[in-house]
Image 1: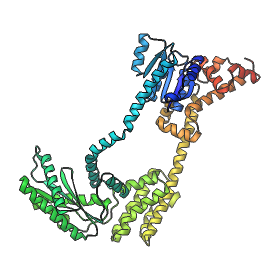
Image 2 (image 1 turned 60 degrees about the horizontal axis):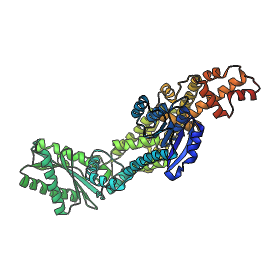
Image 3 (image 1 turned 180 degrees about the vertical axis):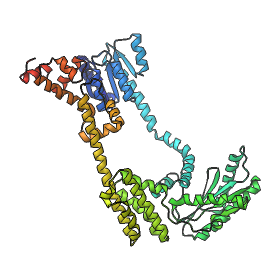
Image 4 (image 1 turned 90 degrees about the horizontal axis):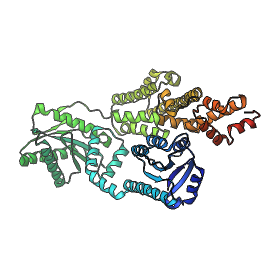
Length: 534
């Protein structure tokens, strides 16, 4: 059922059309009726209809001015013009405004229904096109190989959350279950620009054939002009997984040289146990590949052979930092517990050194403190200063104690940020109200002028204003002007047109219309009822 607003300054037209047409039978619901463009625009802003049916010739704001305002603010709203004006200048302007249908006065209910049905059919077609699951599925099926490659590449360049990884893996039919993972990268040794992409695809195809022949649990894909092998196993030792990668990579290298007459060098990374850390194994494989400048091409290079130093078993990477900061700023308490559990998962599962553990905690606490500092929180008031928190790192007796303390710190900061956000909302609304009280006499005051004064966007302002005041800005401004007008009618001898000017209406007739609509009495009747004579 599409929602509709009917606009015409002639009451008999509004009521006649409203009663003669079975709106529901034709798929429409009349939300409201307006007798001029200004009233209609207020209704459109408040009710957001699908269709506006409007006359052209109306007081205060004509139909084309209304159409122009609606097109600018709500471009998806359909507009049907009722008019007896067929002059070129009107038609020319209407064309520029992309009016959906025209109905020439005098018109019958059948003619208006014909226009409505045409607009409805177009909206139905667009809705059907958007919702056509068959088309979407076909489009998705065609895009799936590309989406799959993008997803696999993202595993190498970003640290994604575990649940996000497995959700996407399931969506793209990618097998990622395993307890150990190892990444290798294959690089063409002879880079001929005109043949490079073709050769890369050929190497990829050979790699996929070797994976099938050996029944390896291995994914093969392209990333940054490299062929990537992602080998996974369940319950294998580190040495066994490295041996399998060695056998597979060596067979690919030999086959490529035999059938393509080109050579490849293979960099082999470190075995990792957590699927969220695939980027680490990839980075190590890329570093191993760099050693071909020393060791030569057309060979396998293990990172553990060329860099014997101990590897870090836990790292506070960009993904973890982003998730923690996002949760502190905008998350809920259950989300906080989930994020902290994720941060400590590797610590609880891994066999890491105390030095690595303390550095990891230091990076975590530092990130939390930076977030609090950016939010301009008083750390002395909350915790007794930064140094106090940093010193605690060496005092934790176990991992659970450290987790509990991190959660406690984050909860206090989250509470302070939320409180500060509420005060910010209230301050902005108070400033907007003060601005409105200072400027309501101006005919051109608008939500855009208020937002320009506050340096915020209209969309953001509208949401916080309604949240704090339980009403829209347009309604608030109208109520303020009417209250001021009532006060002037009670306490002064000013003429109605003078009062209209003092409360922001350049058109005294439109003021009278709004006053009667809002108060239920004319300005003169209200003044007489309050004991004051006009």
